[in-house]
Length: 170
Image (cartoon, rainbow, N blue to C red; front, side, top):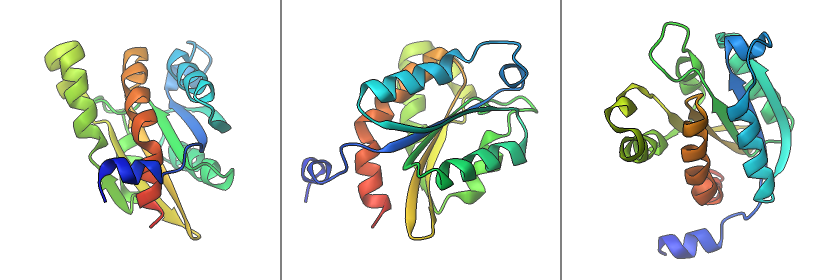
């Protein structure tokens, strides 16, 4: 069975959560443009929002928000922020240990980002994975916090999330 056949059998709609990881946005010092953009794009595509949350760059806050998304029924979680190389960027370190399977999402994201912004793409550690628990599978995609990254990432996620869910549930 080829990719086309797999995609035809993949879920067309899913429940999603967007979690923005940002110290400044969590304190109300800046607007969360990226997170709001992600919610708008996913809703425009017909998917159902079950959680939108802004948390600080703190390990337990990040993990807690992902657990909250799982409990709310999210099939797909997109995080925005905390994927860089600064000392406060801990999204990847917080979530990667929860992945049952890691996706090559980060590699594809960096390739597309390189075409858009050049060598600065080297600083993103965007990633993705599948978390399985209680007989469920949830796809998690971790994006950088910029609006440009949200625009790039959501295209990739919308193109493949159903396919990822199909296989993640097997």
